[in-house]
Length: 104
Image 1 (tube, rainbow, N blue to C red):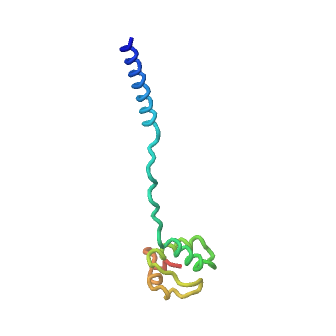
Image 2 (cartoon, rainbow, N blue to C red):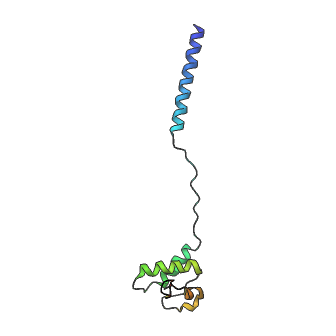
């Protein structure tokens, strides 16, 4: 009797532990989220380009090209009518297909 009771207890413990193991393996593995790599120029370029493109007729296009130029040159002329010579790199950037100024 003692042997059958001990065997029954051992089998039930084995069943419980295997079901727990299956349950824990079915749970999604949580891992730490990837660290956010924030672009240090993002805030700077957003602000400078908003000022630069404030009076633009095609504001979205102006912001797009200004952002590209800002990230490359790390500078933007100070205002909507400020001369491009304030940022020489900005002034020198040209489109490859028609050699016109790239930066607004």
